[in-house]
Amino acid sequence: MTSNHDWASVVNEVDNADTARARQDHATALSLYKAAADKGDAYAQLMVGIYYHAGLEVDQDHGKAVHWYKLAATQGFADAQFRLANMYLTGQGVSQDHAEAVRWTKLAAAQDDARAQYHLAVNYERGEGVTQDYVEAVRWYKLAATHGLIQAQFNLSVIYKHGRGVNQDYEEAAYWCEQAATQGDPNAQFNLATAYYHGEGVTQDYKKAVHWYTLAASQGLATAQHNLAIMYKNGEGVKQDDDEAERWFKLSAEQGLASAQTNFELQLARKMQLQ
Image 1 (tube, helix red, strand yellow):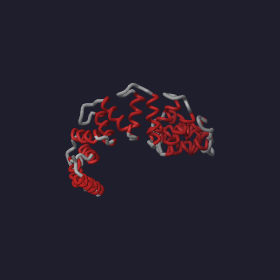
Image 2 (spheres, rainbow, N blue to C red):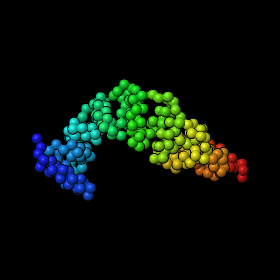
Image 3 (spheres, rainbow, N blue to C red):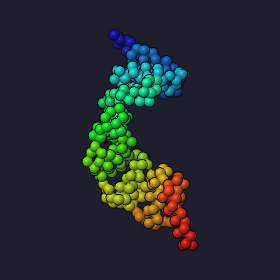
Image 4 (cartoon, rainbow, N blue to C red):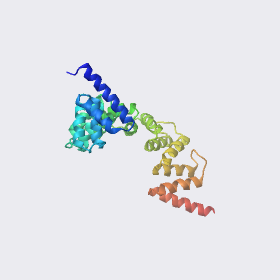
């Protein structure tokens, strides 16, 4: 049984280890984490696992990382459970085992770890390590999405758009799409722009379509660049501008999008005719 004095020393070791890590003194941090980990502190065990996993101040050793992650995970530490699940998923330091990966992921997800909730949703959507179940996928995506996880928000929007595991709902799809788009996800920005262009789940609004296509296009998304070019070409939601249309067609075409390459050539031909 650990005495109050022992736990006081553990708390002191962990605090000093965190301070050392913050100033990039990893040798001191690891030494202190190990001391606390040997006394059973779950957070310290997790940190020792992270050091072995990354090879910081020690030779990289996935087997030892698994050992320390498991000690912390067994004590119910959600971060360790999630990391241990990934080790089983990828076969790092342990034989690859999808069932074990899902088991540890479930434990972390049940403790409200957003990353674990997202990965569990993916498992259910794809039927990896579990029986495929879109209803469960939606449940876990929604929990992760509520935490603000961009990819969960985006995947949830796609599920609502196509009606997998839920009734097809364009408004709900647009809502979750906007959550991800607002956080800067280019694919979500593209999908939201398309929703505004066609009026799916939102009131049709070409100006908003241009806005979101522009954000996605500025991040290099070829399909967004192509669609934005078309809007400039046709003057939809923006003043008609052949030069801007040509610019965006060119950027998209340079990424190999066939439709953009065709439209870029047509745009150049049209330009020549007008000269």
